[in-house]
Length: 469
Image (cartoon, rainbow, N blue to C red; front, side, top):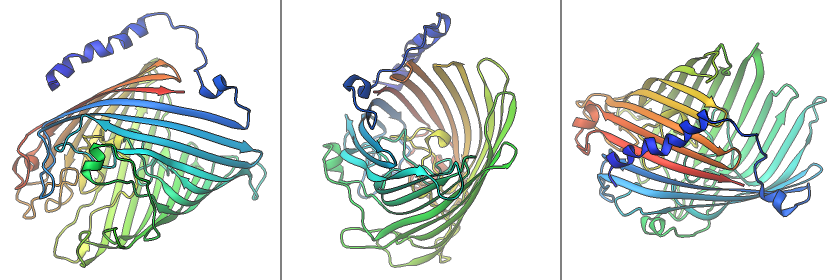
């Protein structure tokens, strides 16, 4: 099916959304829940989701390599099913969550990896304590041990992935103290979980292999939040450590990275200005690739600036201006690696859809832009985004496509990204329909870099259904 045909169906797909706004709003009903249907006791809850997404890409921007050749156009169905059980007996808690992430219709020319496929895997199995804190009255403390997912701050560096078909998870200890005013401190020591299998044949076949962690890759840190530094202004401070070493069967870039960062924000509210500022600095060491013995000093940084205003109107329209900068490597021969490492972060909500698209990433990037969001009703939200994309270093790679001109003669203009998304809660709490389209207008760099595909612009569209129960 051509992209033109898919786009021609967009008005048909969205027509129920328009009709829903003109009809009388029905009385709200409680969403259907599996645990209620089963009549489970209060101390046990059971929930799940089933998500199906069709993705189509035309005009592949990823450069071929010695081991991989990409099709000029790509499509697949990404399916993700979860089933989660939570138990709470007074202060004792335990959770087990199964996630089954599969694909259909992909082939050897698809942009397929473990961000799309991880079949039949327990992404969370932990037990712990959740109860009163020990510092002040009203405090709470949560301590868990086992396999778990994790969100930190705005999820740029550590996230439980949402749009992506699979998620990051960790084996280890996670402690969270929270005050009555919602100030908090999190401390954790973990081993990042490696998703398996990784070979293309197994991914195409949705092969099942137990994920694993190893002490050769360790990740720990502290994340503190001050709920009100100033009236309505929240502040966060963090320290993250990643230490990895090669071992038998596991080739790494031997990253030994310290990431220090701070974040300040005022949350959006109707009739008010809001903002968000985040900066992170990385230092330590890393190797130039997973097979080289050349150790490089790591010096990199990331900055995000955002200012927005939510209009006092029924649709709650919000206009926001954004600027992101993530450093790239200045020189391949200066003994340093200056490319920012986004660690275990997510990017969809800010840098466009991922999946088989994923045209922008927080590495070697300078990207100003603006976005408009609106909620015509409680069941419908809309978003439009326009971003410019340039390389921070014109001699380093455009990392999402592995395109590079070491001479810097191809310039730094990656292009412009335009995106539209509509999300409709057909049955609030149970069924959600999500439609999105994105277009990357190729700039000088993607047109003229030595290993660029020459495909010009890239178009991407997806249609997704989500069932929650």
